[in-house]
Amino acid sequence: QGYPPCVPVMPMHVAISLYVLGLQVRPKLPPQMGMTSAGSVSFSKFHGLGNDFVLLDCREQQEPCLTPAQAAAMCDRNFGVGADGVIFVLPPDLPEAESRMRIYNSDGSEPEMCGNGIRCMARFLNVLGAEAPNGVYTISTLAGLIRPQMLPDGGVCVDMGPPILEGAKVPTTLPCNALGQVIRAPLEAAGTQWHVTCVSMGNPHAVIFVDDLDQIDLTVVGPLLECHAVFPAKTNVEFVQVLSRTHLKMKVWERGAGPTLACGTGACALAVAAVLEGRADRVCTVTLPGGDLQIEWRDDEDAHVFMTGPAVSSFAGQYIVPD
Image (cartoon, rainbow, N blue to C red; front, side, top):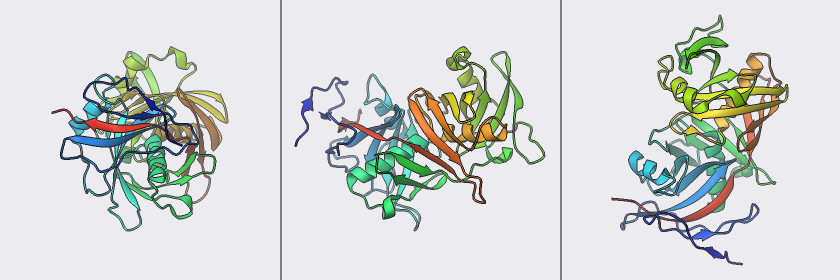
């Protein structure tokens, strides 16, 4: 069966064919060839709980086919395709990996990796027909090797590796405890003193527990904390309300993207922070604005964090790169 075409409501410089997709439908993707000689690029759009990404198949190239500025223009929701970031699927740079991930945020900055993005990339590879031994892809990222596993129900479970808790490696200059960890360190911003726990999941996170998420003006305090001098590489910021020991609710200000509907690494980081502060169990549900993720921080020698959640295809098309 073919997909009924939709009339695209998109900016004039985006040439796009849309297809109606169901959750269980394998989308028909356009040829994935990176940048063409005519200055256009084939793309696919995916999201994880509303945290949305443009994905480009660059497996025949060694570097991303767009510059950071071009990727930022593509992410523009008025004049581009619209996304929180552009993910480039590249050939592996390590013998253990099948592919490599590079990602540019909507502001053109490059994070080490992205939790929701890695799930979307795994789903994209699956749609492209890439082999996954035992259903597991091994993907090289700037944060190291990440292994997402495809699940029968359409979800993706990602072994995110162990959290980095040493303050200097997060990195942050906030005061550490005797173990070198930053737990409930005081930090002033926007006229308020916050208590911050810092965790890296390959990218930095500042986690703050509050009594009422609705009282947080994310657009005011988010950028102030993201760019605070105590975070030399900037930081993602998560505000968290504890609903129970197995249920946490969050809002996120993402480094380089601002407020988003979901942040996978952020959900992992806040689950770790909740355990460190004695607020939650090691297996919990994290409710984000876009939906729920299941997080487990295993209590074993490896202490890996596992994240399980959806990755959904939205549409595919051809994007004309502006001059």
